[in-house]
Amino acid sequence: MKITSKVKVKNPLGLHTRPAATIVKLLQPRKSSVFFVYKNETVNARSIMSLLMLAAQRNTQIEIIVEGEDAEVTMAQLIHAFETEFGETHGTR
Image 1 (tube, rainbow, N blue to C red):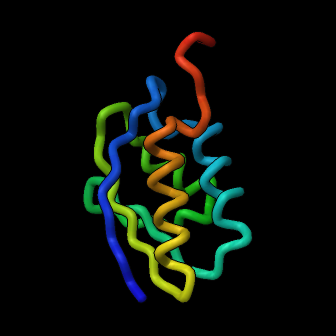
Image 2: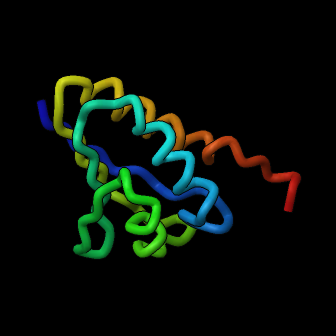
């Protein structure tokens, strides 16, 4: 199964090291292939370096492509992570 969705980067610092590490960790137990598309560049979401190279800033949209047997669960977890700003709180900056 292949599904796609668009998410907005809500973190004040964009898709920086902490959110990228969270994404990689979230994907470790998953079997699906996951790619992020931003500014016509497609990267493997399992690679922290690839995620950081996107340099996605706050309020930008990223397309997520998930393909595999656990695609629906994987996509739901990724969307939730983006929606909750990867657990980062506003009061710590």
